[in-house]
Image 1 (cartoon, rainbow, N blue to C red):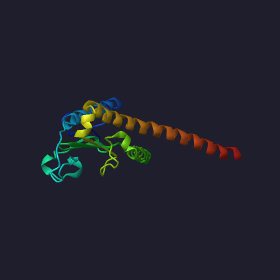
Image 2: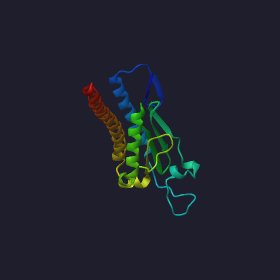
Image 3: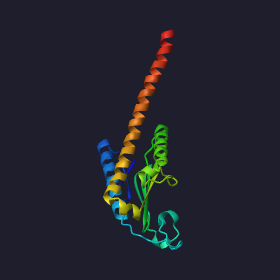
Image 4: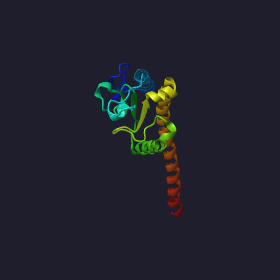
Length: 193
């Protein structure tokens, strides 16, 4: 049984999907995320109700419950989902990348660590993902004053596509190198007989 998202972001069960249908569910999944981000990124300046003369991301501190909106979870499968937490002046987007085996888990962990160590270069990337997710982004109203909203959404979508593709490509390359190494190692035993 496979999962995909509908346009209204509920998780649906579909019996055995073909490769073409899986590609379509990936496109539908990314399109649902794009639409949800477009709606969520209508941010405005909101001064802190706790600290005078400061504006801080309410989604991070959660001190004023009145400005927090209901979070959205968009899931393609049980292990691949996007969690969008919204407030009046900030949005936190957390991504869980599909990891079907230990190799993919290790590659995903290494990729996430690599990017989070360089979070300063990505502006909207958080240094630490929230619990249960691999990578998190924090977008505030000041980011949208400097950056174009559509470009930010496109960056997140392309980041998700590229991360998934890179993990798959690295897994294939790693398995190819492993097979070659095992072949050379085993040929040493065959030559001695």
